[in-house]
Amino acid sequence: MPYIGLLFFGAIDASNVSTTLAVFSTGTFFASIIEPIVYKRKVLGYEILFGILAIVGVCIITQSEVEYLTGIILGILSAFFSSLFAVLNGSFLKKHSATVISFYEFISGVLFITIYILCFGEGFSAEFFSLSTSDFWYLFILASICTTYAFIASVYIMKTISPYTVVLTYNLEPVYGIILALILFPEKEKMSPSFYYGALVIITVVMLNVLVKNRRKIKRSRS
Image (tube, rainbow, N blue to C red; front, side):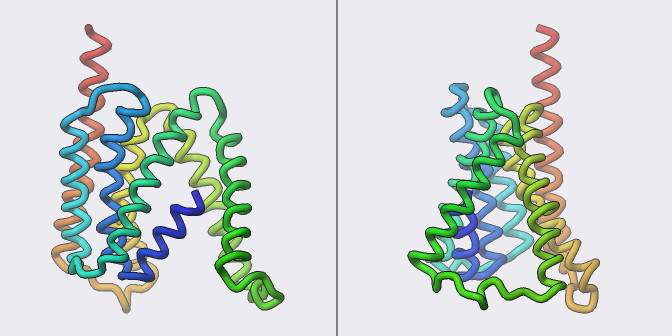
């Protein structure tokens, strides 16, 4: 889990947010291949198609120029490991609860990040832990609600939906991210027509995925 964040933010640092989000959307495509391998089922053509369409939707939103090779490579690696991570969590969920899985993964993440900072970063110091009161509460909210709760919920939900569907919904991140930015910073954010076109593509793909899977489920129950 921590290496996914390092790759993701490394991609942003090497390129920009738009390029990283566009490349990260390839996770759906990876999930359409990884999930059948882990779950030992056949590759579904419509999942690959939806994965490609989701990439198109995010690219329409970001309209990034593909010119940051390092950032693109890091973003693709982040998308691959994120998809692998989601699929493996879905597999672990068959034997363990979402809370137990999340607990051990977060502990591993803390250890990994600690070692990384000590070996490759500037280490720990008093300044490293110096936070203003507002920053502390922002980090507390981000850590508790936006990270811990959201992560446990994303693992738990794989009891009812497939890891592929979870990864597919990740592509909504740039959509609601920009919407939140528009609400919180209306004076700084202005949506272009491409945003609405791209958002429509992504939302349509997510809804089509739900409809197709429900239809297949109904057919299986009748047969």
